[in-house]
Structures are given as C-alpha cells and as structure tokens.
Amino acid sequence: MNKSRFFGSVLAVLLVGAVPARPQTAGVAQGAAELQPCSSLSSLKVPLAPEHVDPATHGLISQDRLPMRVDIGRYTNLGRAVEGYVQTGILLTAMNHGRLAPAGYDDDVAVFLFVSAAARWLHLGLNGAIYLVFLGIIGIVLTSGISGVFVLTRSFKERVLGVLVLITVVVIAYRLGGDIYMFPALVPVAIIPWAIYFASRGSERAFVIYAGSAGLFLGLFRFLRIDSVIPALVLVVLLVIFGPGRRLRLRSLGLAAMSIAFLLPGLLMSRVIHERDSYLRAEVSGYSGALGHHAIWHNVYIGLGFLSNPYIPGYCDQAAISVVEAAAPGTTYMSSAYESVLRTKVLELLKLHPKFVLYSLFSKAGVSLLVVMLAGNIGLITALRRPKPWLQEAAFWCAIALSAAPGILAVPVPKYTTGLLAFTIMYSCYSIAYARGTLGPGAKEGSDLELAAIGPTPKQRRELAAA
Image (tube, rainbow, N blue to C red; front, side):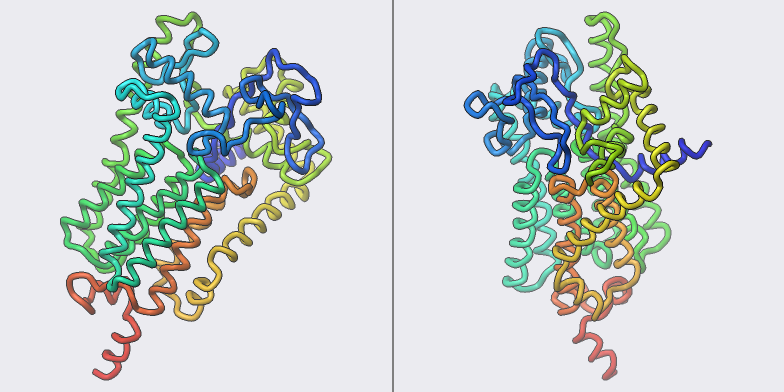
C-alpha cells in the first residue's frame, strides 16, 4: 500500500464529517444580492441556489425558520425524497426537477428513509415528518439516558441533577447544530450512563443484552450521522467489554453480541439501497448507482481554508470544486476521480508547504482543546485530584479525542463540536460524581467487581483502612 492510500485510510477512520450538500448553481443570477461569503475569513463569494434565497432579504434562508433547524440544502432534498417515495413507492428515490434520482447523501441516508416513510405512511407534510423523526429520536435518547441515570445514582437530588445535565446537553447540541449535527451529542447521552453502570455492575445476562442493544443503537446511528458512532463505540468497548472483573468468556460473548447487532442495520439498509438502485437502473438511462463512500478529501482540503492563507480561499465547497475543475475539467462532483484529485492536492500541499498544513491542524486542535477546557472546567480539576482507574480514563479520553477529529481535520465550527462538547461535559460530571462517591452501588455494595472497575468511594476507603 502506497503512502497516499495509507494516509487516506487513516483519515477515513478519523474524519467522518458530513458530505456537503451538492451545490445548486445552475441558472443562478450573479448579482451581488445573491452572493454570500465563502466563510468569515475568506474573500471568495459564491452564488446562492434559487430555493435557498429568502425573497424578502435576498439572502440565505435562516436555519432557525426551518423545522428542527434543518440545513436548507438538506430540507430541499428531504422534500424531493418525500416526493420521490410518494410517486414511485420506492424508498430513497427522489424527484429532482421532474427527474428520478437517488435520495439524500451516502452518510446520513437513514434520515431520508425515516422522513419519507413517516410522510407517506402517516400522511404527514414534510415539516410534520421532520418533527416526528427528530423529536422521536431525541425522545428515545433521553429515555435511555434518564433511565441509566436512575439506576446509576442514589438520591432524588442526584437523579434530578443527572437528568438536567442530559437535557442541557441535548439543548446545547440543538442550538449549536440542529439538524443531523446534534446526533453526535445524542449518542453519548443515551450510551454513557448505562456504560458506566455495566462497567462494574449488572448480571451476566443483562451485560450481554446491553452489549447487543448498544451495538444495535450504534449500528443505526451509523446511517444517521456516521461521526456519532466511532467515539461511543470505542468508549463502550474499552469501558464495558474490556473492563476489569469480567470473565473472558463473558467478554467474548458481549463483543460478539455487539458486533452482530451493529451489523444488522447495515444489512437492512443495504437491501433498501439495492432495491432503490435496481429500480433506478431500470428507469433512468445511464444510472450507475450511488457513490457509496464519504467525502473525506473534500472536507480535508476545504478545512485547510479555516485560516486566511494564499493557497485555499476559504472553507467552502466551491473552493474544492474550482481546483478540481481546473485540474480535471468535467470531473463529476464527489466522484472517486474528484476525491482523487483533492487527495493529490492535499498531499502536494503537505509536501510543498508542511508548515502551513501543520499550523492549520494545530490551530484547529487548539480551538478543540479550548472547547474541552471550557466544557470540562471543574470536572477536569476533580479528575486530576482523584483520577479514575486508567482504563476508564483511557476510554473517555479516546472518545473525546475521536469526537474532536472532525473539527480538527475539517473545521471546528459549532456544528462539528457538538459531540466533543457532549463527551466532555459528561466526563466532567462523571468525574465529579466519582470523586464524591455518589454513584449507586448496584445490587451489592462494595463488591469485588465494583471496587475493581469503579474504585472504592471515600467511605469505602475509610472502611477498608479501618479493617
């Protein structure tokens, strides 16, 4: 494997950010009223698509005016997906200006499937279907997280505080990102309380059930927002599956249950996509199937425009589109050839201007570190004063680092930091609760399993010293 392919594989694991909406520039007037800045630090301006323009202001339609703060490009494509499903009866088809096309983007295809199904099956409008799907996901997540808090904590006061923390995380994620960008914050809300509990407690049967449930949950979110999965998956595997006190047979059984459950949504989604592609091949001349991969090098390339520089005009889709068009005219947007050109450009920049690339990455890493410090605050100090067992620290910090990767490799704007905020806030709260010894002991207080994984509380330490 050559170096560029190896580097690409590493980035593919780390960077799982969103595929940007395909630009709709054809037929758009080039007047000043219809141009918007590429980014706050860029002089590049790009035209707005007609459906994205507010007739009153001649500017981009505000995200706050759309249901669940869905991005305007996604909102338009969701409408096309609903129309396609209503007309054809085939999920994940879309009607794009009267022509059949595949619906949605490759990395969040489940959103288009659920919204289309809700709209047709329940006879809802587009807005109603969006509200139903997104609020339903939030409700399931909060139900899981809150029930986990109740089994993990002891007193009414601690449970109320735990519930408030989870709700706060959801609200922050909604306000900073909305749309699918809040999903990276929803996953830790649902997963972490139960992961902490099963790291040290629960029967063998409950342990295996949790492993399978977590795998199924993460397997589904893989198709809702892929960068919401890897940090939580690593945390659960390290904290729960490989935590101390479990027999090897039970760990293997839990890992097998999680792996099988994780793959199930993928098998079901593959079947839906196969049926969609078979239908479109028969109906649309020249259709060759969806791209089937995530935009990695596109995001990395435009991410280097985070700071003002002489090489890339800004963090904007058009910056990448223009450089590909100049290097290989006629290349299809987001195709393998398109990504190959951008990979070459990134590696070329790394070779010719390594200081610029490293400075860009370190500047974005610095922003992410500042987010961690602000979100962690007192909890970070508490963790230093009373560190948890090394495996717990490793599990949380691996999850925090992985949730920071999209912002570092792309751009650390608020919508790409919701997962980082959620993991850090919950790590901080757990550190404080751990130091105070307020976590519920489960079925048997002071058991060997609990002392091995969670560590003794101050009260238990005094009792052990006295004995």
